[in-house]
Length: 160
View 1 (tube, rainbow, N blue to C red):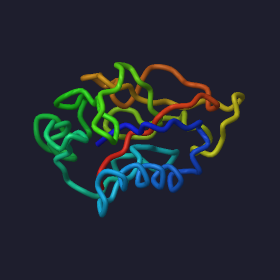
View 2 (view 1 turned 90 degrees about the vertical axis):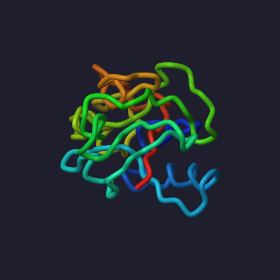
View 3 (view 1 turned 135 degrees about the horizontal axis):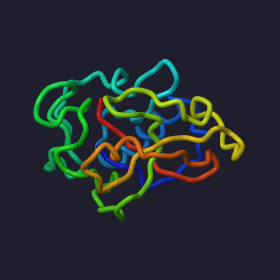
View 4 (view 1 turned 30 degrees about the vertical axis):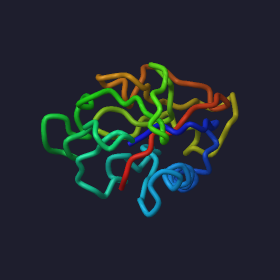
């Protein structure tokens, strides 16, 4: 898993556009790998988009973040990662509380705030939820509050 160096408004081109952005970032460091964005929209939960069973590590491929999708001490559907998510795709440490889009609450389920399915950068839209780097709590995927869709933010990318 990693947080993208590039930042994007809430108009990500839907889930497919966000996945393409994650894959492009991953191709620079792990050619042949398959990544997607940890994003939800109404009717589609982020956890259901992940096909693998884990475990998942940070970009350094050494720091354990999640023990499995539903199993282990720190499952992807749990309340917190085993270690805070802190790295971008280059393995560089990001500042604490770097915001990334998720539209995802605890247990990997969709929140109602997703910049109209990740298709708008309108400041008048309902906004989007996200997570923050450096958090070893539910804040890794769901902060309390909406961010305006015209605000640039990163993406959290997870290996399929």
